[in-house]
Length: 270
Length: 108
Image 1 (cartoon, rainbow over the protein chains, first blue to last red):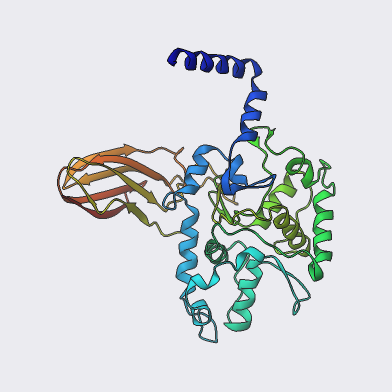
Image 2: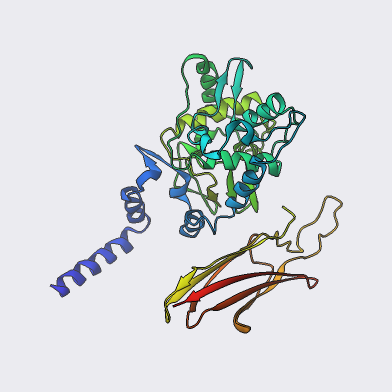
């Protein structure tokens, strides 16, 4: 019996060696990714190296959790003329559970989309009478990570019909529109070639469920809009501003592409 | 993120003879000395260059670090618990600054 198994193993090995890359690709397709895959949509986690995945899996090892700690400290910190902290209205941070999954969303008073960063800042200016935090500041990133982290593991569920529909269409058009000197659209990497290599990098599906992420390249945490800017620069187009209407619409579309994928904030990526 | 904050995670208690995992992480930018600032001048190297762990005053683990070690360096190692005592972790930075953290282990 033992010899039969080893003969099969040898046969399998030889097959894998002759088939080379193709065999690996097939094995990869069949792998069970559990919660990290919904239908044909796979989180960036499934494209990450095993070492990177291990970093994310261990809360102690995950450097993104340092930002969550910043957010946790700020949660109870009184700021602004109204003399309030986040906790004054929202009590425990657990009250934020499930909140982040529906962002970005249409807000009637603004007559525009709003993402979580902007929602936090609106809370600061309107309710706390405090100053806005700057995009990509450690405070805003920390709080965004902290609030999104409360929804850890919950499926992304953005609303794309009704009033959000025109923004969704705009985001979709952005996603499929060629841009920059390289004349590439988002779809050319993230829809057509996920899993393939672009030089040394493995292309992912460009899902937003883990953002804000700790990126090893950045040595720190960054927002989805920072990633958009990086992508835009890589195809040599002029990036849009943080929190711009273009990126808000794109964020909505990207989140819809990853509908059902679990919130992983703070995820770790290369 | 300028504050350097060391963190350690060890099990609170262990049975005699058990091998326990000691995890450590320090908030540190690990400036390599290779980067240039906006003025075109090199940013001087400032990294943690040595990590030491003592248990009841005896050195049980030490390692020298070099510029290729990532920011927010994480280090884990194993330790056989023989007696109760106190760990003393020490991170030594370029320029001689030291960051320490203590943690107790109860062995039954």
